[in-house]
Length: 219
Image (cartoon, rainbow, N blue to C red; front, top):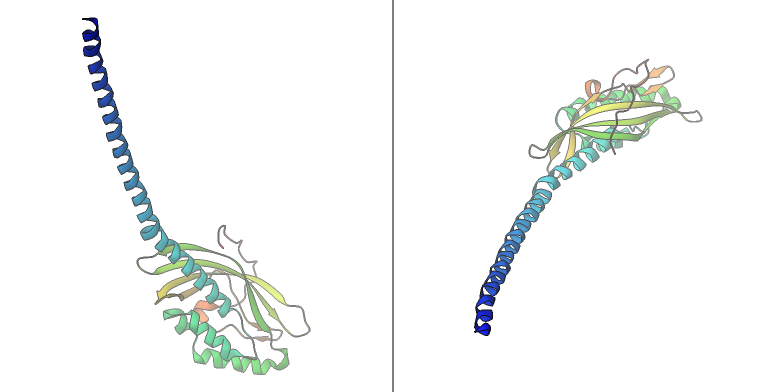
């Protein structure tokens, strides 16, 4: 009689344990499914949303930096190479701002300066995107460079310059479609001023006030 009672009472215990085990298994499956969905969403965000934005940001910044370096680097003995590099970095309005007539004028000024013609070089200080639209293929980038004008056997004169560069994706490349100076830049020799071609976009008369402080952020 005692043995029968013990056997009967142990059956509900086994059933309870089975129910708990089954419940835990179901919960584990649900948790695993939630984790799979979450990681899948994160993977989608990283690959299809964040990566295109990051690629656009990097491409626009790199293109803007190269465009400004090309515009502000002039070898008086090879202006044709300067024009070639500029044409490769610009598109739209920015490219239209630097014409063949600008190159001709620059060559005339360099010829007049003779051996006193200065070489213009620039070094990137920093850059930062202010707008990026990966879907539209457009961006705006702030670029600051240190531009140095130097004549042979003389110390160079360096000035910090800032530009707001509108960028457009052209095929696989990002090119500058508009360049607005935040400061000014002039290609100058003592007694001879030959402004960097590009008039409204790439240059304007040299300022008397110090260049504005460089904004935070950048490459």
